[in-house]
Amino acid sequence: MEEPVNDIDPLDLENQVCFALAVASRSVIAVYRPLLEPLGLTHPQYLVMLSLWQHAPLSVKELGRLLQLEPATLSPLLKRLEATGYVERPRASGDERSLAVTLTPAGWRLRRQAEKIPGTIVDRLGMEVSELQHLHQVLTRVIGAANEANGVRRPTPGDLSATG
Image 1 (cartoon, rainbow, N blue to C red):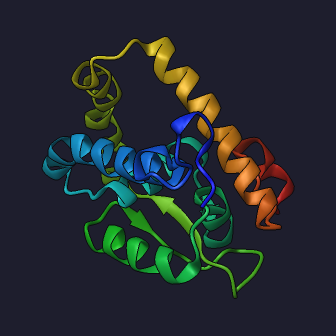
Image 2: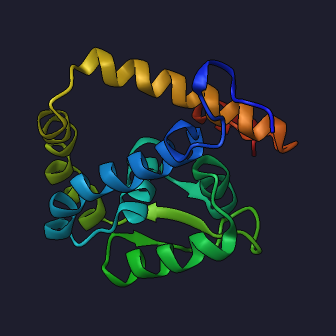
C-alpha cells in the first residue's frame, strides 16, 4: 500500500472541495433563512427575485440560464411567487410560446425590504466585505471551471442581452 505524500490523504473528507462547498452552502443559506421568512421567500425564490429586480422582465428561458436552473426546478418556484403576488407570467408579446416573467407592484415593493439583507448577512457572518468579494471571485472561477469541465456554457448576467 502506497503512503500518502506529506501524510495528507487526498480522500480525507476534510480535504474535499465538494464537502467544503456543500457545508458552506448549507450554512450560509441557513443564515439567510430567518431574514427571508418574514418576506415569505425561500432562498431559491430570493435568487429569482434578485434576478428580476436587476433584469426584469425576463423570459423563463433567460431566467433559467441566469440562475443555472432547469425548467423543472424553476417552474414551481415561479408558480409559488406568482401565487404570493410577487410576479406575473404573461405570454411574451413576440412569441406566444414564451412566458415573460415580470414583477408586480408588490414584487417591486418587496425589494425595499430586501435591501437590508446583504448588510445583515455581512454582519452575521462577521467577515470583511473584501473577504466576501474575494470569495465570490474565487467561487465564480470554480463555477466556470466546473461548467467547462462538464461541457456546459453558462452565460453571466452581462451575457443576457445576447440570449434573446
